[in-house]
Length: 195
Image (cartoon, rainbow, N blue to C red; front, side, top):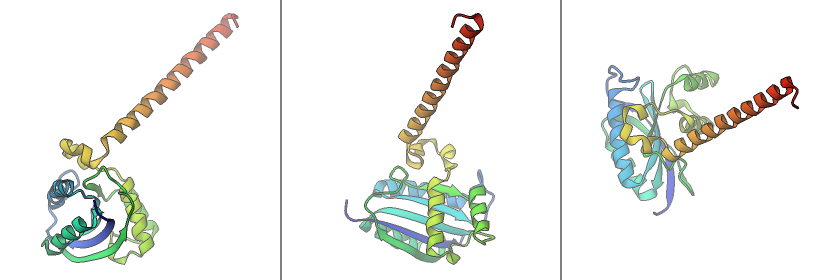
């Protein structure tokens, strides 16, 4: 792999809003599905956000692959007002297990926007610090498309991280169960006067 880069671009959608499927625009679902296939094939990773008719997307990977993909996006008729807002070299991928994570507008984003003086999602008005904050929210956000595409779980969320999370919860539950049992035994023995 050559030099790694991260780009963040924004654009406005050209497609008409349609009835949402699980709160996601059908056109966005199609873009997302195609992106996951192509990004996996080209060794790219990313996170996409779509709200209020605007896209916010971060892509990471080999510089040549990123340049090729961005050139295609510039010609994509589903985007207008395309603007590259950040491009920087990186030493490692920020989200290596996601070919394309999708983060919809949720309460956290809505609250974040209001706290920063925005009524709607308008990435064209963001200052660089705001862009970084939005990216942080997206990286931490839940991806609801996991339920829509069961065969892409390993792409949308790190499967090993999910398993490790479950193992930690199980170990924590086991610890509390054993602690409660030990406490009960000590309490019983105290009541009976054997301690």
